[in-house]
Amino acid sequence: MKETISPRIAILMGSDSDWEVMKEAGKVLKDFAIPFEMTVTSAHRTPERTHEYATSAAQRGIEVLIVGAGAAAHLAGVVASITDLPVIGVPLSATDLQGMDALLATVQMPGGIPVATMAIGKAGAKNAALFAARILALHDPDIAEEYRSFRAKMAEEVTSKHQALQNRLKEL
Ligand code: RP5
Image 1 (cartoon, protein in one colour):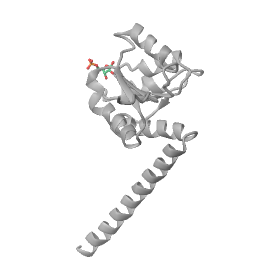
Image 2: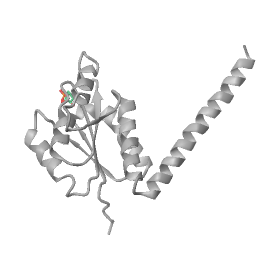
Image 3: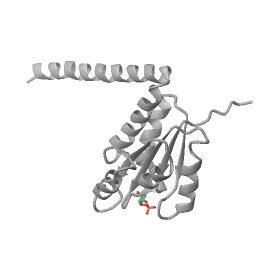
Image 4: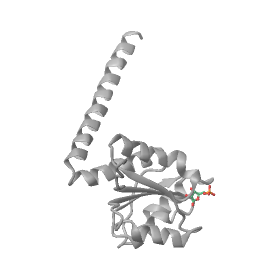
């Protein structure tokens, strides 16, 4: 029988139109072998479902929530107002304001209810997953080791780019 692994991270998005950006968070968690779940739930269109999801997350073993939303992005703040788990917000570009609306709605939380707000878009989704991994790494040596390898690989890539640049310079 296939073993079921409980998700440790939840990725929430306000609409399926957020998928193309929020999948970047999923890719990172997959690379780190961190079990996660993903759901669509809306602060405005499905408030009861959002409430139920946020209320039950900790009991189900979720440790960190990553929440992406665009437009008047209240989802991360609403979820943070319900759960005691850390909430990481990802503002998304969904209107003519290109994510500035979502950024301000996500980041400008009143004192008392924190949302760790990332950059708008794909970099934010990626960093949200890395930030979640760092939180888990505090008490999970395997994830801490995975993170060290990730950083070392990134540094190696920069060094290779430097080398490639030196070769291009010779061609000037
Ligand atoms: C937000 O409204 C969602 O997170 C999405 O970014 C935006 C637009 O949603 P759709 O109209 O595409 O469903 O709640």
